[in-house]
Figure 1 (spheres, rainbow, N blue to C red):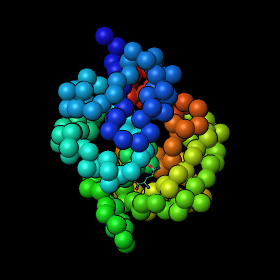
Figure 2 (figure 1 turned 90 degrees about the vertical axis):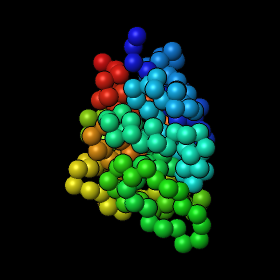
Figure 3 (figure 1 turned 45 degrees about the vertical axis):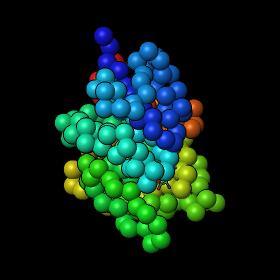
Figure 4 (figure 1 turned 60 degrees about the vertical axis):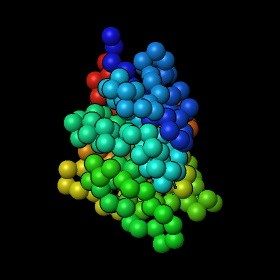
Length: 198
Ligand code: GLN
């Protein structure tokens, strides 16, 4: 059977990622992942944006934290957007007033939450992404800022000086939302690089 991709379906932009992945792969190859058993069925995973503290708690409640961390460490390709990226980070800058999520620490970046956008600063722009396109639309919604990246992390795109797409082997991290723009080229590039699409 053809390999299937999953969307972590605990909270956040789940329908939009399901739609984007299904547009690229076909709906029968896309699964919602809510349990460790679901996770076993997929060969690539999208981690949606949403609210990272809530997502972190839901990962524990659904018993996904340990199996997800170990599959990612074993090489499961993941594309994480916004809150999803926060969840993968090695380090979070502590939020002054508020609770922070407990990240999985599998992606060697340091991140500050809610940096582009106390609401009003959320914005859309167009990115040049090597190997993907010169005009990829990107929506930044109370987006995290990547403050530093480790030596094994490639930066695939920047806005001004800031990395907005990073890649560490099979792990892709995006500070914005490609799933709300109707442009599926980043989903396709990730699935192609992950061996799910020829
Ligand atoms: N501000 C959110 C957080 O900290 C992330 C925003 C998003 O995913 N759009 O979790």
